[in-house]
Every structure is written in structure tokens, then in C-alpha cells.
Length: 134
Image (cartoon, rainbow, N blue to C red):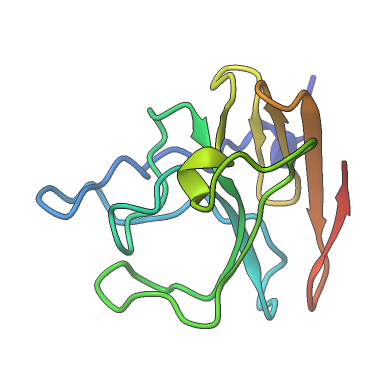
């Protein structure tokens, strides 16, 4: 039997759009009262709605301070793991896809495998940042 923390999938309740809210939550990975939280970014075209649980696009891990999409994010940072040469100047040229069913979204651990670049990204949050393994 899995520990309780590992049975939590933080994607539940995150299927929101600007036109239709289903809670406006994000699949945060972080520690309680931590300085930063981390979320995979699936779109840079939707403003504050930068994560869609049904979209198998992986643009990177976003360090975020966003309490609500209606307030927006500030001082965010996007970490995009890639290999090889960059073919274009936009994020569209660097994004990858990932298998929705094989990714792990826990409050204390995040794991995504980039299909395009064949990179497994693992993140464990700390009080002020995170430990990332590629």
C-alpha cells in the first residue's frame, strides 16, 4: 500500500479556463508555507492559466507565486530541460510532450519524462527552492 502522500494527485481540480472555472487551482509541488512552488507549464498562450491537465505539452517547470489566476503570477521563472541545438527563438520551438498517465504529480514530488528530448525531470521542493534531478 502506498503512503497517503503518494496517493495524492495534485492535478485534481485543475481543469479551469478563463471562461469556465473548476476551482482555479494549480498542481502545486511545494512545502507548507514555502517561499516558492513549482508547476509544470503546458501553455504560454493562456495568461495566468498556464497549466491544463489534459494537454500533454511540457514547456518546463515553472517556479510560481500565483495564488489565483485572477490575481496573476509575479517573479516567476521557467526551467525548460532540453538537449541539442535550439531550432527557434520561441518557447514553442523548445516545448516537448509527455505521457499524462506516467507523470507523477504529488505535493512533495514531481516527475515528468520529456518525450522529445528523452529527459526525465524530477523535482523535490525545499523551504526556499527545490532539488532538481535530470
